[in-house]
Length: 475
Length: 159
View 1: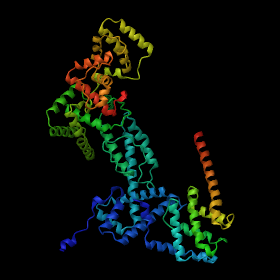
View 2 (view 1 turned 180 degrees about the horizontal axis):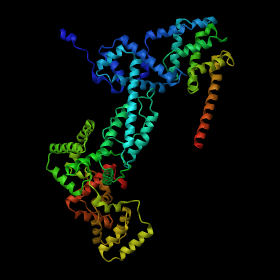
View 3 (view 1 turned 180 degrees about the vertical axis):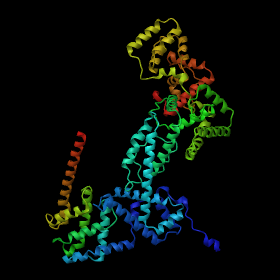
View 4 (view 1 turned 120 degrees about the vertical axis):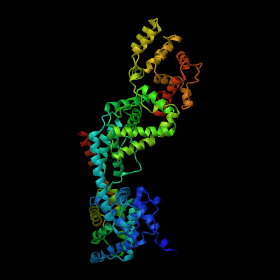
């Protein structure tokens, strides 16, 4: 054996260390590689027992030396979490083992308590900052997380007996949450990212942010206020494409014509070129928005890595409309058809049908329908009321946008969509014998549309399914 | 991984220290003619370990054993012949009662109450102490706690 072999340091295998039980796994590994001898092991066990005994006594306020197993288990986990807080702050496992050999568990635990307490203070400071500068958006999960879940956490959290616990109903999803973490360290990373995301979004006009969220909800057929959506991600996507559209970096609005230009721009690029273009846009955006914090810039780059597969998939399937949120101002008038809470009462509906029947011109009839009707249910009732001749029904469908047509398609072709949701296509729809007149005419109307228009309608059908995981109100 | 087992499996050296600590109580108990030998002290630790395990509890030190010895060695009903076995039974009653009283009574108070019943109504019978006197005490204690909780809930809902 050479001298070099003799001098080789014994190295701990880091893959054997468990981040959630770091100290215990380090002791086990240290013992395995011979860095911790039997005597030290026994001392550690005794000190651990003493620590737990003292903690139990404190927990019972000096009244009792024993507790139920569940309580004891929880107190021990809290102690181990706190020990881990100190041991993880040591630069290498070998140095950690050296520390274990010369310091008592009591000392290490004391340092751990200081670290956890400091982290708690930092988390409280961050929370106050977020609370003061929160976004004025009506996303319920975002607001209740700030107003209820986080205060509840701080109220229940204790460094001594439940340092390891994360007792809070935090609903608002971050773009990059680390759910492997526990206790105050989890909350701290959550707050750091929430603060970063919040600060980024606050660089935009809050009305523009709300508008994009609203349009996002409209695209996916859901009420954005109730949705568990990450605001940063939605804002970041539109801000990136807004820059690529030639807008000022502070703008989020992307018009239909800008969208078409973007679509054309990306259509001629390969995947690497797309990634490069988006990467550059993000860098330009960071520069123009005056973002200097390295961690925010890094977060934005992480966004790009996570976003690219989704973007490229949408690009390949010609469904960028599901990724880039287009400003809905141009289509806003069509929304009235889908307001389910705005149905006509029976008497008003009967009067309207009578009036339609009295009209001699198709255009007059159509105008009457769109002037009076504000819900999908009423619209279908009109279609089924036999007050339009076969050739007249097409004029009604003509007035509808792609989203409305996609909803009607989901009604007419419900069985086909259920059978093969993602493979369903409007390109080859055929009227079925049992369909009602308006449904037969609807199939005929679809056959008269261009391939591109049909694709757009299909995209809405598929995106509605993706957003809700079901065929929505048709179920 | 059973984490508590790691703490529970204390080394041989610590067990020896515990035995010595228990034997030190002989200084006081011997005034009443009661003495434990090392084997009996070890038996008490084993009885404690069995009791906390069977009653689903965690305890690191042996303070309770020493307190029970000090409290009961003055009893006129403590027979030198059955000293160790009576202590074993009293240890079992103690942990049983910790659960029965839902941890609402501290160690010192519980030992004091046990001692009172042992010296009076139970007349030195551990069987009567456990199955009659302490059982009744625990039931009354639970009823009082429930009533207190109900009245507290009432006050809260009134608000």
